[in-house]
Amino acid sequence: MNIDLLFKIAGVGIIVAVLHQILSKAGREDQAMMTTLAGMIIVLTLVINEISSLFTTVRTVFNL
Image (tube, rainbow, N blue to C red; front, side):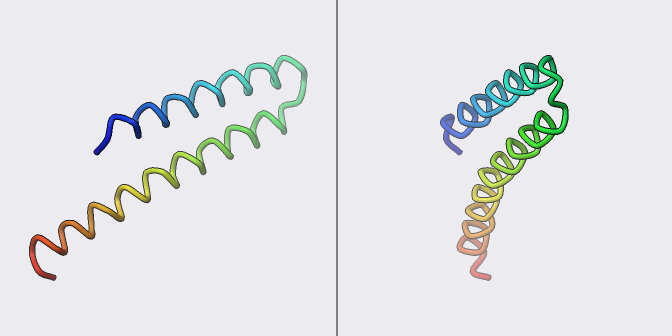
C-alpha cells in the first residue's frame, strides 16, 4: 500500500470538512450533506480499488 493513498484520503477529508463548514454556516445544510456524501463515495472508491488489488494478490499467492 502506498502512502499516497493515505494522503489522498486525508486531502479529500480536509476539503470535504472545510466545504461542509462553509455550507453549514451559509445555511445550506442539504448541499453540505451532499458534499459529505460525495466525499465518502470518493474515498470508498479509492479503498475498494485497493481491496480488489489485495484479493487479486491473495488469489495469486494461493493459486485460487
